[in-house]
Length: 284
Ligand code: GUN
Image (cartoon, rainbow, N blue to C red; front, side, top):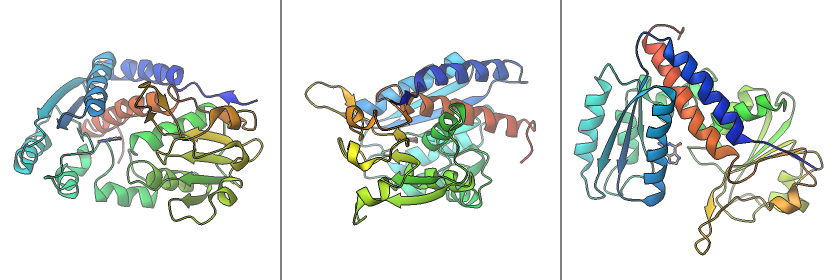
C-alpha cells in the first residue's frame, strides 16, 4: 500500500506561503505570460497561471497572439518585457506555432527573467547545479520528495523521458541532490530492467499505461508526470497503471492532483525568487 502524494494540498500551502512573502516586498512580483495560437490545453494553462498570480498578489500581464502571428511580433514583445521593470518573469507557453523558431524565442528572453529556466545560460547553471530557478515540473517534484521525506541522496533514480522541459532537468536536479540517475527513453533496449532498479521512478513519457506493476520494485516512490487526455471521456490519466503499481510502491502521485498542481505552484515560486533577486534581496 502506497502513501498517496497530495500535490493539490501541498501546492495550496506553498501558494499561501508565497502570498505571505510577496505581501512584504517593496513591490509586487510581476509575471508576463505569452500565448501564441488557440490550443485549448495551452489556453487553460495560461488562464490558470494568471489566476495563480492574482491569488499570490502578483502583478501579471497576458499576451495573446494568433496562430499565424509572426516571430518578429513575439520577439518585439519579449524585448519590451525584458526592459520592463515591473516584470520579473517571462513565460512563453510551449508549444509555439511552427513558423516561430523556439530556440530563438527562448534565447531572446533575458536569462534573469527566464522563469522556466529554459535559456541555455540557465541550462548551463543547472548542469553546474547552482541555478536560482529550475523548470517548474522538476522543481515541483523535488519539493514533493522533500515534503514527504523521500531521500534522493544515495538512491537509484530512474527518469523515463528526456524532454528539455521535464526529463533532462529532472535528472540534473536529482544528480545535484546526490541521486544516481538513469535516463530512459524510446531507444532504451530493456525498459523494465531499468525501472525495476528504481528507488525513485519518475515517468514523463506521455504514453498511457507504459508502467505496469511488474516494472516497479517493491517500496519504490513513483512519480507520474503525464497528463494523457482520453479523447472519449475527456479525463486525464498518467503513464503509470495506478491500480497495479500502487500496491507495490511506498509513495505514488495521482493523476490528476499530483504533479500538475505543483508545477503551477513552482511558477509562482520561481517568479518570487526572480523578483527577490531583482530587488537585491537574495544573493546571486
Ligand atoms: N508547456 C508545457 N509545459 C510548459 C512549461 O513548463 N513551460 C512553458 N513555457 N511551456 C510549457
